[in-house]
Length: 23
Image (cartoon, rainbow, N blue to C red):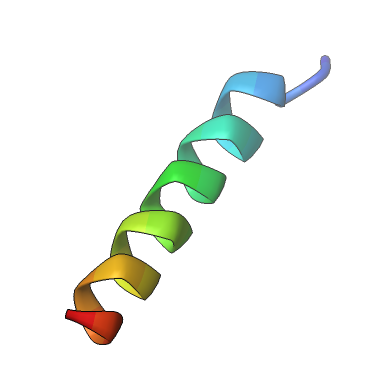
């Protein structure tokens, strides 16, 4: 099984967190 969707979600969450920290 390839958890590509999970990886994508993790990436989005990380980006969101980063954006939140910046602002």
